[in-house]
Length: 495
Ligand SMILES: *Cc1c(COP(=O)(O)O)cnc(C)c1O
Image 1 (cartoon, protein in one colour):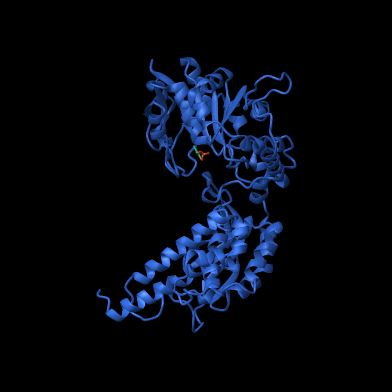
Image 2 (cartoon, helix red, strand yellow):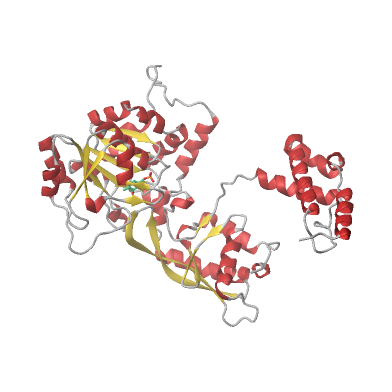
């Protein structure tokens, strides 16, 4: 593209009209910014904006208008800078409303923690803690001690250790106990969890050799027995967290496998994945084998996550035989994968809640969300429907509808919880309705750009917003931001 002489002339004229850095900084509109954000950051923002404007002016243009109508108005420039500095000051990690219907949503940070854990973390942030200091003896302590007794009490295990997440727990366990030896796993349990955790890969990283046995749908005890040899380090079972194998199937239970392992002196280890500490059926939820049941069945070690069904912070827990835990704790990877004090400050009080299982459905946030009765969610949906309809305008049609929530994070993948929420569809009759798919994605984007973004899910030309995870404490904030008078109406979003 060639630039005409007159355009070049006007480019030069615009460039000449750009104020200098000094004039911008000296303007009263900038003083407040310097006070709030400091001179270093403000100066950098001013320079960046001027550089952008210069580049824009120098670039090819077809019209005679300046790139930004206000290039020589210092107050206007400072308004842009103020907005940029304010945006930069906000944490990129924001609270959102999880209306996806998936309670333990990995992309949204999984378990929401109960107040006891929040207080624990705040305390740990504010002051030094006895993280690795034994207050009884005045000697150096071990950070695992802060939760080990409780984990043993709750699971019936002899010993326990904690690492950064369950993937780390499995990696550490295999590295410490099966390096350069074989681990026997059923072909039906070669799981891939989202985010790149695959049993065969983790096995390789740990320096262990995966010995697959059986078939995808059927594995018998004799398959394991035939594979046991002098190189066998472990017999391993992995929870099929995110899939089910149905039909003509058979698999070996932990108790049978553990008996076989004992005969051959090969520990049986179980990656339970989500891992629950209580029988969930007592709260009306689908049944899931507990960690205690797995230990009682004879598993020598069990690994599970802290932030799935347990409802705590991200962590990986390993419980089981004392001699094996000791070996694991001595492995150099344990140091690399250890948890920080914030994790322990949250984990210990969450585990403490399990001592009173009768209060759990109220006190443990994850369980409270999972057990919210459909009737309660329905009543909430019916009250909020007119508000949402008003906020979205008549180009969209909002209805309260029954839905199914998922537990999420690979916990009980096929079990659904009856719930309630909104369906939002593009109006078929409105003359200025947004057309086709873009109507829904505009809406989805608008919700994502709210001060506290609202995350739903689109399926069948409908946006679904499940209210299971909108507890009454957050409802006021949810409605207030929808009804905010200054909010740009959704219909102004250009397709
Ligand atoms: C979720 C899961 C993992 C990974 O746990 P993280 O805590 O996410 O690291 C490992 N194994 C199984 C079976 C799982 O379900």
